[in-house]
Image (cartoon, rainbow, N blue to C red):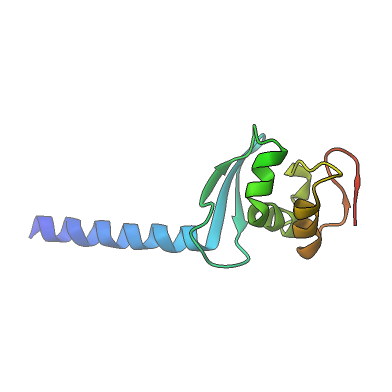
Length: 106
């Protein structure tokens, strides 16, 4: 009976973890951990450590960049003036202002 109870507790914890990771990005930034709601439910980028990310890494994770911008943390995204794909993602999610390099995002 004890093994059966342990199985069901593990099943519930596992299902809860998957449900949580479907709905949130767990992001490690310079100031700590952030929980960012995902615009679409998926298991893409459940945990990301963005402290050392360069432009090429942000271009691979445009959905995460858009989610950060939509949540008001677009300042964490590093984007050069020549990165059209990332700029389009930030624009789509309503980020206004300037990126970290000071170029205006339109």
